[in-house]
Image (tube, rainbow, N blue to C red):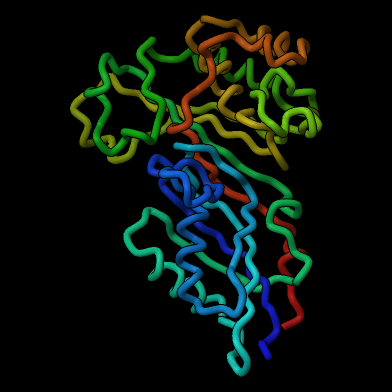
Length: 288
């Protein structure tokens, strides 16, 4: 006989440049996802059944996570009590070894809790660097962590004006890339928050190039379409470069056609961070 199955919610982070995305890939492929390493780390828990991770937010290749979430079920062998949340974090991190993946915290949740469907909000941050003339101008600690843009500094006021058109509930078809899920999912999304602001680089005081400037674009919504954030970022940066005007964002929304999106405008993946996944406190409460 086995002990009762326990469901946990884990909060974890990773440096995405090394992975094909968060989703696990079959052994026949040379690339690996973050899930592959999580599942391998969970094998050493010696559960009576294989442990599978249900991730809340499926980030793409090259995208980073300051904090993603996943739920998992662990059924231990007879006579073995459930792992405490702290012990689960400790063991998984030890088993992950030197991989740039870290479990931040964990908590027990009810057996019907779902990390993806019960998320009430997701926050993404995109980082842009301007003032570079060549790739070598970018500090070592910024490489693969921001979009180095060669077209000069951004018009912040224009970008902030353009961002207001994205706020609220819209059909975001123009800002969705084609995928196998595109036709199955509603393009109607509600963007609760958009902010464009100057930022600081990592350890920027050690940069020899005083012309470098950093910018952050933050988006909050319950859910996003495939590559929606990167397409919104690309369009807003184009406004900041005067390649588009603020009113063009409103026109792109009205078009409701992914083919209307300006070519060669989508932002690359490596400047994108999943910052936070939020849940209602009541959904995280358990009886024990």
